[in-house]
Length: 174
Image (cartoon, rainbow, N blue to C red; front, side):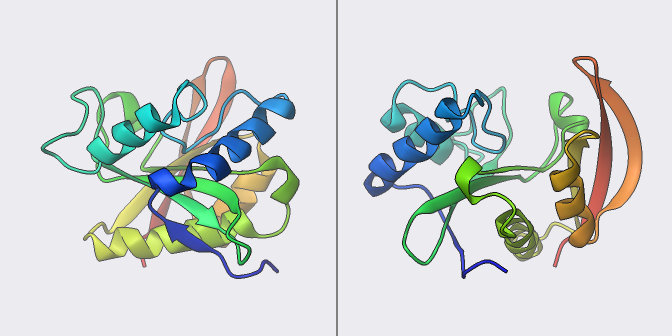
């Protein structure tokens, strides 16, 4: 089982740790960091931080996006082990993708972090009045399927995205 993790809203003080987190994905040949609100595509941490901060409020959210809370998952050593987001609602683009995305840094996988991150985000979903959280996962991503099922995920339907089969699950908020 994992050490204790804490979900924290990104801050400017997290820049160095966040850049290290992002670099580990790149060095591992992974160009996408799911649940990161495009941290994988932003050149500047400050620009990314402004974007995720703006997206937490209906007054400042990007008009092409939805209100979203993004959290770093820190371990007991104050190291970022993962990232997770919670989209308060779904728009047409997100209807297949769901309310939540997450990633665990490559060197910290298979330690239970994703399961605990998802459990904590389900608590947060309940706190903001959400009854259910929809998630989608590529069928080939067995680790993420297990994470979703461990947290009570129930299969709803399937779809194909960019030639890959994916399944949609629903989980009750806590």
